[in-house]
Image (cartoon, rainbow over all chains, first blue to last red; front, side, top):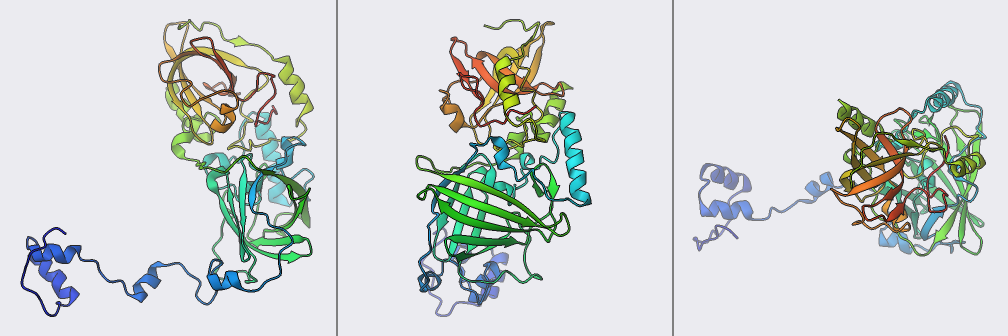
Length: 293
Length: 149
C-alpha cells in the first residue's frame, strides 16, 4: 500500500472525521496516504441505504423461499424457445382481429395506415431503442430463454436482452401506490391444472405500443395462459389483454413457441450509434440527410 | 474494379412479387421482428450499386455496410445498407471477415422508398466474383424478413 511507513503505533485510532480533516490539511503526509487507502467500514445502515430490497418479503432466490414445500409443477419451461412463424410473419402480431378500439386506438390504426401508404415508419419505437415491452417482446424474431425455478420463472429475450420475471411464490402484486411502471410489467403466476396462468400489470405507457402503434394505459393488463404441448417441444400461450381505457373487452391471441436445441441467446443491444448506420431507423434517416448536405 | 455507376439497374423481380402476394399483403405494416419496421424499403424494386466499402460492421441486431458509389459526374455518393443479423448471415456463407474497408463490391438492395441513399441488403458480388446473399437465399426466398410493401 502506497505510503506505508513504520510510523509510531497509534494505540487508539483518531475519530474518522478528525483523521480526514487532518489529512485534508497535511496532504503530503505518508500517514495520510495510508489513512486514505484504508478500507472504510460500511455500517448496516449505509448498506441498506444503497441496496434495493423489499423488507418483509422473501426474494425469489432466498434459499428458504426456494426450499418451501410446493406441489410439483406440471411442466418445466426452462429452455430456449423461438416464436412459431409457420403461418407467416403476421403471426407475431396480436391482431387483426382487433377489439373495438376507443378513440386513441382508432386514431393509431388510421394514422398507421396512412404512414404505410406513404412508405413511412409509424411509431417504430422499438427501432429507436425503446423497449418493446410486453406483449411485443414475446414475438421478436430472436430466441427467448426461460429459466424456471420453484419460486419464479425468469425470462431473458434474445432481442435487446429484455428481462422479465414471473413470480410463482404466492406473493401479491405490489401496492398500487408503490409500483414502478415497467415495460414488461409485474407478472404473478399460479398453476391451474396443466396451465400456468400469469397476470401482468403495472405497465409503463410512454412509447409502449402493441402491434402497429396501439397505445396502452396504466390499466393495461395481460393474462397469459401457458401450456406445454407436443411432448414438451412447444409452448402455447393464450393472450387475454384488457385495457378499459383503450378498448372494449378482451383482446385475445394465441401463439406458440418451439424449443430450440442447438442455440443460445446472446447479446443484442440497440444503440443510437448503431442506428445511425441503419437507414430504416429514424436516426439512420437523420444521418443520411446529414450526408446529403 | 470500380465502374462508373451511370445508370442504376431497376428490375422487378417477378419471383419476389409472387412471394409478396402470397404472404401478408392484407396486413398493415408488419414491424420487422428483428429490430424495426421494413415498410420503408421497396422490396419489389431491387437496385444495384457498385462502389467501395468505407465501413462494415458485423453486429447485432443488424450488420451494415457503408458504401461510396461513383457517380456519372465523377463524384461519390454515400450509401448506407443494412443487413441481417450475423447469425442469419453465417448461414448464407458470410464471415466477419468477408468484406472490409476498401473492398470494391457490387451490392443489390431494396432501396428506401423516400429516395434517400439507403437500403436493405439483398446480395453482394465481391471483388473476386464470389456472391453472398443476405435477406434472401439463393432460392429467392426471404430469410427472417417480412416481405410486405
